[in-house]
Image (cartoon, rainbow, N blue to C red):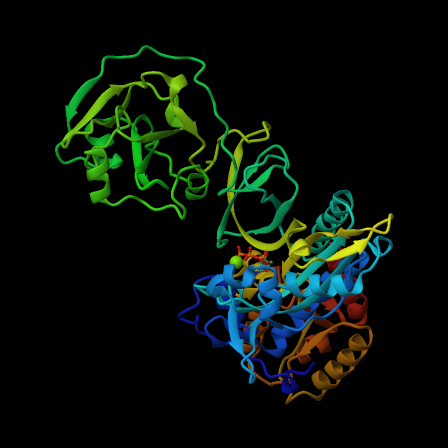
Length: 572
Ligand code: ATP
Ligand code: MG
C-alpha cells in the first residue's frame, strides 16, 4: 500500500482522556477514533490488525471443529423473556422498540438466539455435538466505558455455543476449546494465563478466563509459582492454617487510645505491627441486624467472599454509624470482637492471632494482649483476598499476584438456557432430551488493545508480525529528487508485494525523521530505507522494529534477506 493512497492519521500529542498506553497508542497511531462514549470507528489501519486477529481465531475455531454462522445483532424481547433474562439483565442491556412498538434489544451476548436456533434445527442425538460460533458486534451499556476499546460499549466478540447430549460430551468440547484458546493466544504472541473462574472450587473446570498479563489489567490474578494453579484474586480461596506453635497468653490490658480510631493510628500509638491488630467491619444482616467481620489489621475484606456467607445482606452493605451504635452499643473506631452482642465471623488468619490488639467496645480504649476465649468455638471463615506469598490453594508453591486483562472466557453452561427454552433432541430411545450447553467467548477487539499493552516502547507500538497492519515499511529518502531511488523502490515494492509481503510504501516525500517516527508509532515490524547514497554504495538500510541500530544489506541480497527475516519472525 502506498501512503499516498492510504492516509495515515497519526497524532503527535497524547490525547488527554486516554489513560492507558494501548488507548493512547491506538489513537495516536490512527487505529481507532471515538464516535461517542464507548463507541469507536476502526480506521483502515486498525481494521487490518483486527481482521488478522479474527483470521487467527477463525482458523483455530474451524480446526477445533466449530461451525461459523452469523446471528442478527438485534434480538426480540420474547426470547429474553423466555430465558427470564429480560428482567434480570439490568441496564447493560440496550432496549428499544420498533415502529410496531415491539420490544427489542441489541445483543450483549447470544445464548437466547443460538438456543432458539438449536431447538429448531437440531432433532436427533446423532447430530450432536455441535459447536456454533460467530464473530460479531455486541453492545453492552457498560456503566463505565473506559480505556478505549478495552472496555467499550460496542465491541466485537467471537462467541461460540456448543450443544451436547451428555455432560461428558460437553467436557470434551470444553477441553477442546481450552486447547483452541491456548493455540489462539499463543499464535497472537501473548503472555497469558488460563485462570480458574470457578468460584471457590480448587481444580474446578467448569469455567476458565484467559488473561493477558499486563500492568493495566482490571483483574488481579493469583497464581502459584510452582504449579498451573491460577485464579482470579476475588475467588482464590485462602486455606486455614492452624497455629501449630501456640505461645504464652499474656494478661489482657485496657489501654487509652483517646484519638486513635484507625488501624494505622492504633498500631503507631501502641507500637505494634498492623498484623497484630484486629480490624472490625460491620455489615448489614439479612434479619435487619448486623454481622461483624474480624480480620487482621493488614488484611482486606474480600467483598465477594463476604457476600456469599449465609445471613449476610445481599448486596453486601456496610452498616451505618447509627446502626452500629444502636445494635452494638459500640462506637466505630473502638469496636472489638470480644463480647460483641452480634454474630462475629473471624477470618482464618485473625483466628490464630494471640496477644492481639483490638477495640475495647468503649470509646477511647483498646485492649492489648487480647486472646480468643476459645478458638475452637469461633465462627471462622475465609474472608480475605489471597496475598502474595500465601501458600497456593492447590498445596503447591506460593502465590504470586499479577494484573490481567480478560480476553477470553469459557464456560460450561449446563442446561440453564436449553431448559428454559426447551431445546431438546430425541435420544437413542426416541425420547426428548434437553441438551447440555457450553459457551466460549473471546473479546476480539479487546485482544488488539491487550496486545499493545504487552508490545510497545517510547516510540510506539511494536506489533508481532502476525498482527501487524503491514509487515514492512519501505521508506525512500528524497524520492522526488532521485530517479534512482524512485525506480528502485517501485521495483522492490512490486516484487515483494507479489511474494505476499504487506508493504507500507511511504511515498509522501517527507523528511526521513517524520516518516521514521510515523512508522515506528504504527509499529511496523521491519523497515527498509532506500537512499541514493546507499544505492550507489550497493547497500540498503534495514532495521527491525525491536533493533536499536540499523544494518546495511547488500542490494543483491535484500530480497532473500527480507523473505528470511519475515519468515523466521513468523515462526517465532
Ligand atoms: P468483564 O468481566 O471484562 O466485564 P464479562 O465477564 O462481562 O467481561 P463475557 O460476557 O464473558 O465478559 O464476554 C466474553 C469476552 O468479551 C470477555 O472475555 C472480554 O474479552 C470481552 N468483553 C466483555 N465486555 C467487553 C467490553 N465492554 N469491551 C470489550 N470487550 C469486552
Ligand atoms: Mg462485563
